[in-house]
Image (tube, rainbow, N blue to C red; front, side, top):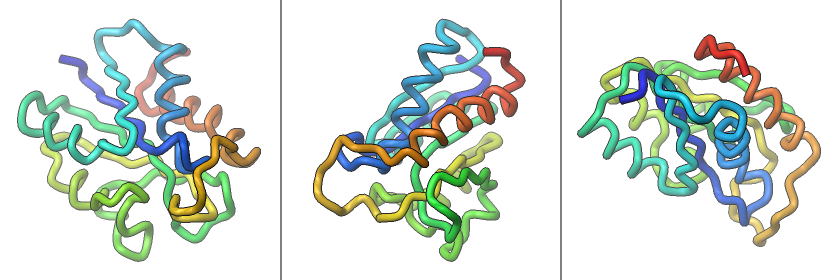
Length: 152
């Protein structure tokens, strides 16, 4: 089992909401194959994946990457611990599951790396990602490499 599991979540059909998936895909191409890190593009099923992971494997470290709304400018990244993820910070993720609840009950060390988006993912379907969020993908990959002490 990998020491760190990185879970990207989002919906690529909802533009900026696909941020976590885009980061997971890029990290997978940068860092795979590795035994110490598992990278999962969980789409909009991240809550179910984390539940499954918690009940079976319990890797020591979990990083969830997602789009969120926490009052910053679009494309800004912020790393949250479970305690910092209150209803005022981002409440539920944009995928209908309580991000704070899931990572707070995770038995290992858990963090959420969120990218500020301008909408809650309920707008019309679109493959278009804003330039701010697209730029944040590369920044997020750098942050994850620093967090995991991995050279890309």
